Image 1 (cartoon, rainbow, N blue to C red):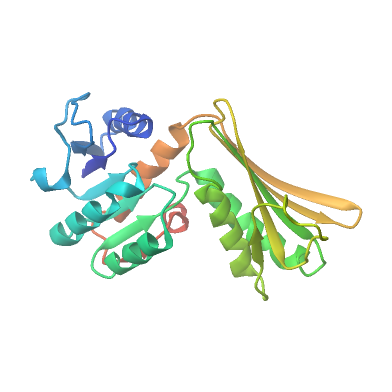
Image 2: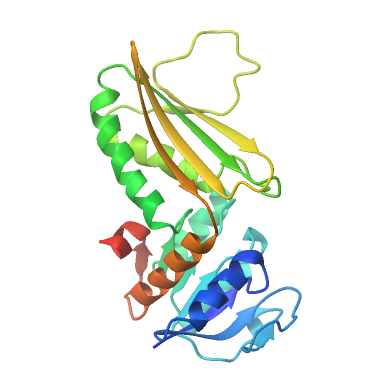
Length: 251
């Protein structure tokens, strides 16, 4: 049994995770953390981590970056591993997460779905061959009109994965509206679309002379992220201090 504290439990993803946990005999949500403090489910809900004295094996976080400092203090103090599913962290916050991982196990992923993490591997393989053949690389991501950060954490993760696979450094270009020059070879274009109820769509385009290869992942519901988060929690239970990612969960 893996006991989890669910941060952001009353949000949309928090409720998705709660629903899946109720159907999983290997998972129990023992407490929730939510700024509202409202108890929507059977487990107790606290507004702040300092109010929670319930023991758990793993923290699963689907809250906002504003909660990060308090969350890190709690997991370091209690030596409780954490699955961080949020996006929109600043560079300084990412550095703090890396520092925390030296004292306790942390798994951070911009996207918890199995499909996206397979896509991360596929784009690396494609980039190794196609970049050398002078293919241009563009990433287009689409999300619902309530998402506040852009580009998405997953789009940046895809760009970073491509970067790691290539021998030379590529720059990220987010906006071409002010440019009056042709596209540079050593860049990865990243475009964001916001509208309607799009759950999540990520497309990596490799455009060469007279041919185009497109690798794409489409999420049709938030369920895939909830399932992935619980799989990550089971994986992280009992792990030694260090930084982990979803590629280790899926094997």
